[in-house]
Image 1: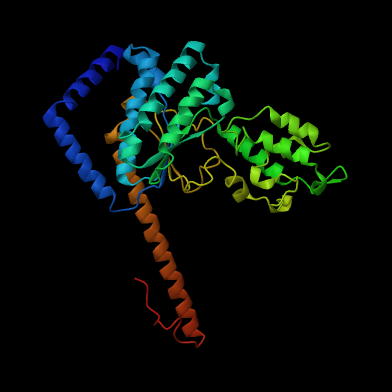
Image 2: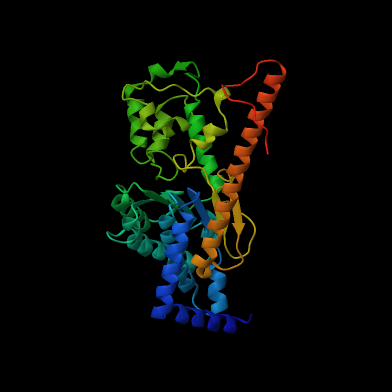
Length: 376
């Protein structure tokens, strides 16, 4: 469709949907569908690659920043549907570390939008407050300027007491960076008890204090800002790797004695890595949706996508993605989940019946007090 035709079509669609009778009817239908969805299984963790804002802007002959603003409006509507339906965790790919390669004008504009929208989302009485959702920023904080960091911290502070749902904003983020951070924290825990002949227990109080100072600006992960004291800590602790300064505070006390068990390298597993990711305390990823028709993950949640994650690639730009695109996906996920659970139950029944048959043939009669039943 020509860009002018697309623009006119979208304007007509928005105008029509904003008419009071149409808007009222649309809301009633949405509420009914969401109510029906809640009667069945609902994904507990949904992730979005919000792709297509720039292309939408080009096609619509509007400024790129306006495309990003429209993308935020689409996000707000989708978040409301998620929380109404019962989704507990929503993770959005807001800004990739690779996006810093874009023009300075666009990067600065995105940072300004982030400051404004984070403030709007977290205000008392706004979306997150209404649904009891806390906001978490997952990513490499040290790459973000101070003004944006302050906006991030305010948003997290304002929503920290909300405990019904979570909004993870990946900003700035790549999955490779997240996995690297997880590996670094695991390696730090796996430091051998001897460091070039020195026992950890003999670390001086000065060294322990330096390590503690390093953590004043580096609480848990690369989603927090690293402190320049990290280098000082690794220098003072003669012969120790710099990773020691990245240890969480609870692993080092003020006398320099680590009082938590050191991870054995042989015990490191997939679960160990999962437990050190930014999403460690979130439920497994059930559903990942990417708009714009592009069929790749683009370095987003590569570890979290597992064999039971549904990945949906939608051929529309993110600002166009609305409830009528999203609800059918939720419905489809619920139907597939029901079918999967039904097949699991049938499989368990068949296994039980086979066991009962074998037991009867061997002369044991009943199994677990129940008669053998023929599977239909």
